[in-house]
Image (cartoon, rainbow, N blue to C red; front, side):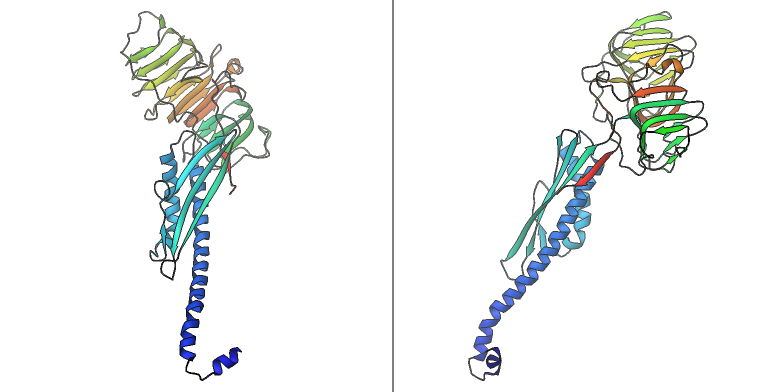
Length: 410
């Protein structure tokens, strides 16, 4: 039949060909549109997966929807750039508020990041547009509990454990967000026992030696960064500057202290203390005692305790600053130095995101610092100390987690 059609010399051939060409060309155009749309849909899905993973990588509890969206949008735009250059063949549909909607939800120990978007392929035949919508869902599982966390993203020896040191982390992890090849360093005769060691970069001095005992098979290197557990904490408003009582032995009430030096034998009544400048400097036979207290180091305030002083501090277990003992604002780069001596103990969070923390424990403080949490830019530990993971009551329900685990589930 088809051969007869082509051999026909009838005058109707041109008309019949023209009529037949319309559905044939439309079918060919449809096939081309379908293939192009399919390719772009694959690229759209890949771009959404990359965006959702980018959001999950930078995600922390308390991040706003706008911040989440911008992290994902930058990744999404970069991955769609090759396709979006052909403005005649595709366009974005506005979803929320810019093409990409990102949402974070929590479900127990898991968080879910959802990224959605769509595109319109303008068909070869006028008015025949092809519209597709896709989404990507990334699951974030919480990492194990951490007792020590260094936040600096680049520092060598962000966590340094050295000297005649015996550091025991019962059921918890030592973590560092540094990408350095020596992000966590153990040197000398230092002994280390921990659930594991977790770092974005690499470790040094943690090989298969008797001085290192980890419950995990090996240090967890090249991991995702750990969340800053106190990132969303806002210091209280300043009150009027209070004076210091005279004499070596004194009792202080909660409030704001401006450019004062706190030394001697000092007892802190329960509550919140704001230091605007000045310093806590215990030397000689100094003593600082406080139960249920939070100390905020603002405007360059310093905190230093030498080896001959006694430090006994515990945080509140309820309220907005539950679990926080020392909070140094990020712009304050002064080192916090805590030298343990007989009779000293500190529990709760010691937090200095922009500074170094030097912590020297001793055998007498090992059981009384069990619920201490060190979080700072960099950390150095000497002496003997022992911490544990099970401190929910003492820390007011706050926790600190090492890294996280991510997977695309849709």
